[in-house]
Image (cartoon, rainbow, N blue to C red; front, top):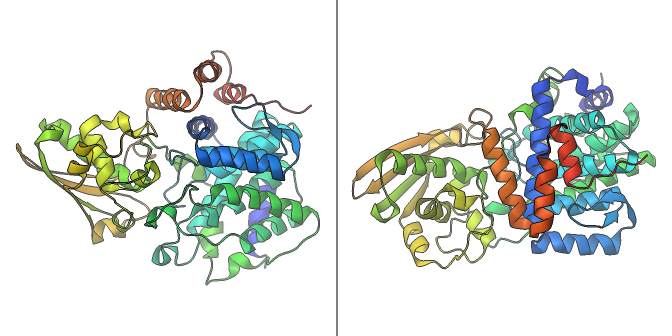
Length: 446
């Protein structure tokens, strides 16, 4: 009987974008656009800038572009830089089953590799779809991850990258299996950044795992071997979750996009609060208390009422609710939340109580729901949101996605470059995918 990893390698080897629907192809293009916007916003951040400096020092120049710059590096180095920018501000896509963010690893890797080898648009779409499929399934199959609260994307996204890059290079079955095994066996040990009380600047190890996926493929091509039975080890993975229905569904279709630049676990609380304020005509100055019953992971975030950095603010339920209540939802799409010492925000944040609700927690990760009780001078009102905006069951509209793209691009890039990027992305007469490739200066090798 074949190992699980060999079944996965067979799937990666034979996968074709022609196996998917037009809806899935459109979803992939939407996610590439969304990820490019996140990278534009994150381009000038210290982590992204540092990643570019380090990559230029450690890696050779090559044929893959570092987005929004003139730099061209080897494919793995460019993917590292672009992943660092895309994941810098926690506004990149995610998936409920994975409890993580496949796009910030898979898309930079596929576009960098595709640029170097001259991949067609269909090749790119295919490699992105297969990377999401493998990564999400592997993430969901990790044994006891809920009990261990081990949600870091970097624990599995290197395997997704290995699948995507191996697919683009058309590795044969044996080499693909070894690449996946190397990525899985030697993946980094990390913690979910949002649970730390002393946050750093690099989210969930995603740029590191992007490099790891590349290294796994290159090592496999050099004949290095690893544990082919790793997905069959019950203490590590539930193999049936990896192979069950493989090839009949596409996980990428349920990927969510984020309307707010903060931890996804907070979004349902934001939506519920804003819904109550709008429905009952409650202004921020009339709020006396906000009680949030939500999933355990949200209750365990740092949740500081007076965060000292924007990164800390993104992982605080009370502070994000205060910003939303006072300034509206749009204030949370701009990655820079402004003056963190604002007295009105801090005062309102201190009126927020966050509690873990056993029933809501039991639905995690399939749902990330919240129930909010708004106590105000006009009365007390309660509302619940199970599927926040951007979920596949509550998707962002095309207009909302377009507005997000323009907002993030203008936030992160200098004005002339921002407008060129927006014009290219919104050009009429080409496919959305082609437009986005033009927007990042993608130059396919010939």
